Length: 95
Image (cartoon, rainbow, N blue to C red; front, side, top):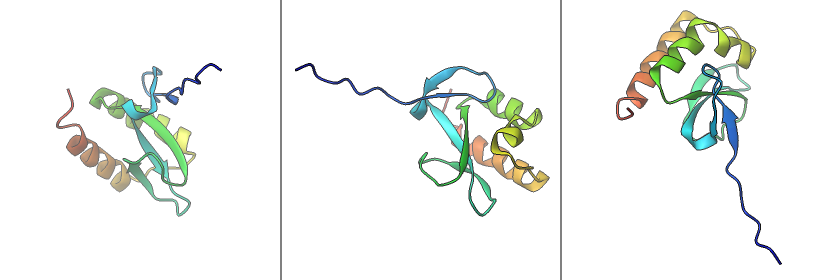
């Protein structure tokens, strides 16, 4: 009997449209309460969207309202600033 090969889940970056492994991307989630936050575990309940771990993708996603469209929610300026500051902290160690 052949051994089943488990495949890694694939997701598409909202900004650059590249398909990558789910673990290589960061998830932004709109929780059932309407709060928009970065989901570092990738398992929080709510509507999610994925972005690369690259600052350019985050800036493009926030600037062009792609994130708002994917989450089907409007971002307040305070939420937008909070996401940008959180992502700067998360990406310090990356590239």
